[in-house]
Length: 333
Image (tube, rainbow, N blue to C red):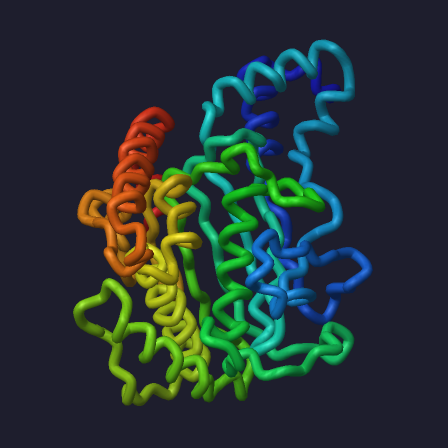
């Protein structure tokens, strides 16, 4: 039966179903570098992460767009459905972490492209690196010759900052127009399905050091836990590393204020999950309320910088209120 002969209510259900269609997760064995490209980091302090974050060359298009080309009637009805979805629907992002090598992010669901996103569910899957996806640079991602953090930190920060600046768009340059806001960012770390992913000894040592200087006052992670589920333990390790990294950024210390501000400006709240279950909620609104000026930022111009900080916090507070950066629980399990 032609689509036009179906009842309008049924057609609307079809449009909605198509709009929220989720793409299949990519697999490392079938991925090709020719279909991806790297994006130059906008921050010159992070040259070590070149060729480490591989994004799709083409921006993802909502499947509904093809349906809208059928005829004028379908176009108008599909537009009506898009308007009813709202301004900030939920999105799904998949990130393959090729162990100690690179990140491959893939948008699985983009119901409607807009600047203000609702809940963004991001799943992290951990794999060994297939030979055809190895980079030429086989350097140590956990070692750092300079005073800054090791490359592994820059890789994840570049993924985060690029996502907040560019959203699902496959732009060649970072967007400087305020970027994309996310009401609730869910980071779900899934158990590794491959054997031999552990040990991540260097990763563990680094986030233990970060714990000592982050906003975290205590660790609820058992470093000596013994489990036969190696895949789940790998997810736990990676989740704790990201938690420690985010808390350090959110503390807006002397070395991180330049990088952490974008989280307060663009993210309503962050939840960290392991295998579909909530592990931590970072409570961005409370952290933002409590964050204060660190006099170690520039001791030679303390007053001037403190005034700048207070101005930034007032502007950011208004921005968060204006764009409704409030938690959303629509995807909680």
